Image 1: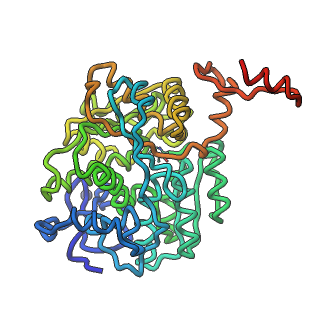
Image 2: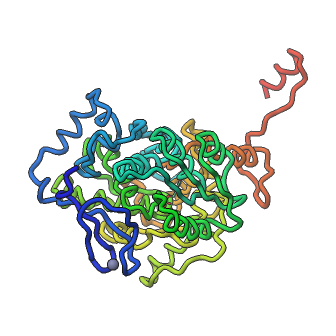
Length: 427
Ligand SMILES: *Cc1c(COP(=O)(O)O)cnc(C)c1O
Ligand SMILES: [Zn+2]
């Protein structure tokens, strides 16, 4: 691999390391960024190259991550483990737009990735780097989707996978994937933040490669959500990109990718990024409004388990991208998430609860006059509707504690007779 084109750099103090090594933090404690040598890429016809690769049969070109490899990580093709990921649909649903109060809203459905969430975009890069480094064991702490993704990619790469999950706080669809793909699954009596803390200690003590989003290479893969979205739009820049925020790796990645496109002159302005958090897990909202350092939320709570995170690791990187484009951070209640989800699902699109914070947040920002109704808005749906079937069924049966559904669609029991069925259909 060509180590000369990028380095690792500390977000806090600027210390840097050339090339590949097993390192997730600076000695000062700061998180790390992959810093690309953009000067080496300036003047190359990158957008034409990316567009031409969409018609290619090459394994790397077919991936919605490695198609953009010059801006992701120029890794030797032999190290790359790809499903391939990306190539997700961009929906344009009038029903969802109307619900949000917008003239139009495009939704990039990252639940259409190989294991059903955007995590695959970062994981293909993280696992490929692990292979390049000669690592044989990988681990992560997860609210579910990271472990599902890591388990699958590790299995394909022939690596041993360890997932640390908060006991009782992971949706069954996601847990089932980790088990199915053969990961050693360790339930921690504690929340995500406790599991995250422990996995870092275990990885250090055991020499296991850590694949949480603190791993800077995962962020590089997730930038490709922004690249592929813009490519879908013919490289036109939307006014707003709206997405949910938990550990904040994804918003950090999208912000970083867009800034790189801007400094290369491949786009002429930045979109505003709106990060939406669940009310019970929304420390970034306060950090954004006060300008102070993020204060972790001790017992984060929300029905949207994928964003039930009180101490997000990438908050500083995330704010950087939000501020650069003049974006914002907002919080929505679980009730708002579930009603938005009912609309997203009934439109035939469907997504897991955390994803629907995107639509609930857009609706709130439009109502508040922050996003104009005629703005060019793109939302990210982060995970597949089947990831959390229990919440869907609970919503429609009206059995979710403390919550009355506004759009229930419960199954109806009918006697096994033609007349009874006809009667049931006609009402
Ligand atoms: C991981 C995840 C999120 C949160 O992304 P962060 O990068 O942690 O902010 C949101 N939705 C789904 C479905 C996820 O899997
Ligand atoms: Zn540092």
